[in-house]
Length: 330
Image (cartoon, rainbow, N blue to C red; front, side, top):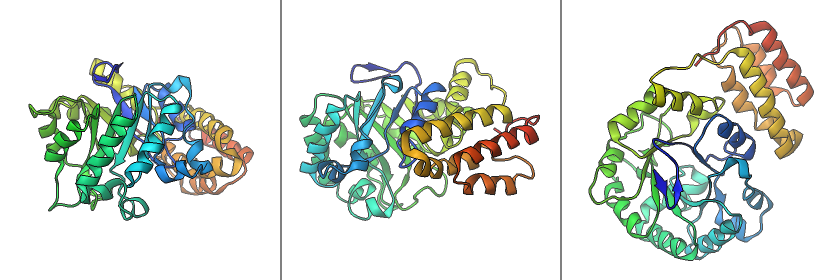
């Protein structure tokens, strides 16, 4: 599979852009475990133009994580063009346009998935950004706004005609948010349409190697994208790729391995965001790293409420000592 001139191999596995999740510390782990391509947290075009510190900081990418895309969102075509040009200066392989974020603060203001209610504006933004930059532009979107409005079959061709290099589709509507089961049926129809020649990437509910293989085999997508299934489980990329290549499942991660991984992740997070934010944003990962351990509730509460990194390390060592002989839960 290729996006522009970027060769990603056969059946690549992508790591999805997610706010407060796909930061450099977690991207580093996902890359170590084999993610073929990943994206930054989504970045507000308005924030970039205002030189907002948080937005500008998200432009920083490291050579070891390449190929990587920078994802932007917004509803103003001119602002999106300026933001895309700023992103291009950061030298990513791809610029991705977010037309799929369902949260109220984005979609409710007419950006992200909100643009599914204004297709002409979505296409105007796409066409202008494609013409403004010299690197591949891709799009991530959803099936539609709700069950009565799923324009994705027509929209895919329209976006392709705007010049995008690949299309990622999350198999839910905006109204569904992240509830219910992702519907890949329309994703498969788009991929198998004779009118669609760009790569189609499927996204939604990929939480295990077997599910990943089923999506490839059933819907013929060019790549899959894993989002929430990687939170607290960055080794999912290794496990999926091993299963795709061999048909064999790797043994579950042991608790000892998870503890050492959690320590490394914590260190990366502290280096990137400092003690306060670095600890706070690790909490969702900690909860998932050790999900399924017996009699773990009180320890989990300590782990996700402690603010001192040194004490967190001590708690992690306690987990290793107490549950270290048990297999990880996969």
